[in-house]
Length: 165
Image (cartoon, rainbow, N blue to C red; front, side):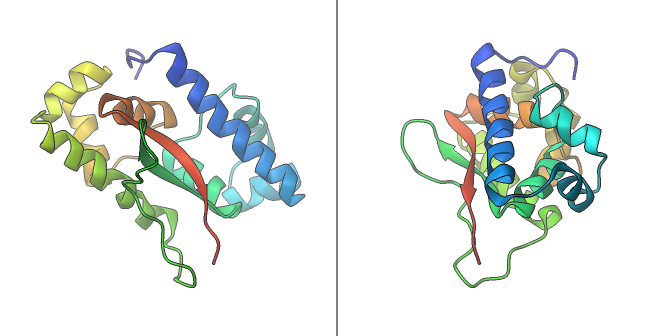
């Protein structure tokens, strides 16, 4: 992933998502050690994420968000159209491992609709075709920055939304 093609705006966007999760943790009054325990990582790891020194893998970021009653979505950058609808009120929330496919499906569909192959998307984002394939199949959970770069190629944005039962 060393040659991932991103711009400063994408990096700022991902840092903004991480900052939003930190602010949500503080709003909830959840201590850093508690969050680390719930997400099953070290306190230092959470601290590094919140300071934007590191990025969590997407699955871990989804767990982090779920603990705070948030869900990642893919939405149009030009409108508020959400390509990844959240569950209905009262509906059981899926585990992040199953929820991942909710994010993958629209990106794959957008790629297919635009006539791009996995190889072509890999070339413009700076990752291999097999990385794109594993992301779409749900067998690999990329970092937030790769998902942001993929969404950006289709005029979309990775964002957070509140999800309550």
